[in-house]
Image (cartoon, rainbow, N blue to C red; front, side, top):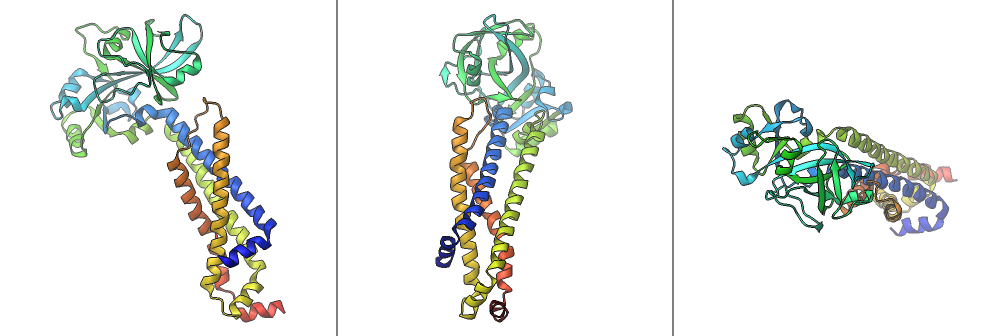
Length: 366
């Protein structure tokens, strides 16, 4: 480390430029990672946060919740294998509504739930509805950006029914639309179901073990039992969106490895004579290798700290409508991977140092 620090102090401009490029690459990696995480949450946070292990859907639905349709009979069949408190029907419908007789249309997703079940979300403002409540709903707080507040009335465009917002949840979205939660009494009303007609659901959530889920899928016809990751991939555009962003991030890591490899290899070539002299006076290859790795790690750590600060600075000024989510876990994971990539990028230089012949290097110096 002593030799590494002396060299960094001696060639400030050279290592400053290397560090600047690393800052820009790390900054871009963190920003795109935060954007990918934000888009993922904006697309499917209601499923990601769902307190369930598995979802039962119609077999022909191709793992898409909005294509699935299950009846109350299927729910009763499932409850023969698992207690009723571990099952929760779920109705999903994309909709458009207007606010207080305004002509402005707002897209949303309706989630119909048993409000006493384990799928019921937490309310951060106002109060939760119950299974007998009429004409009242709980909405995601992102709708406040559209000017909605507690007590406002919204009109469903398809059914023509008006609801009062009595509570707000946080982080509940589906297919890039805020989620509005209602009970099955109102779900039946907007679908104009008569009292003697069966309720229809899109999915049935389960809190169960893998064995129990397999047993249900094996013994009940016409259904598939999927986990939440499969349900996420079934949301239209989710896999394509995340795949594109993850590919961008992967390429940025590869670029970072190549940039570091080239820079430090060129610097190593320029110092072959000095390394030869050091070897001639007794310096071990391991000592010289530790010098290079120390430089790489030091520059990378400083670059990461600066890029993290820059990313949080940019995130602070981003509009709230921008889906950006930079969690501590994401930062730690990206930073750790960046350090690994940096060390891998320095391997070419380490190989070159190991091959230096002290006599030849001194001869060239003369």
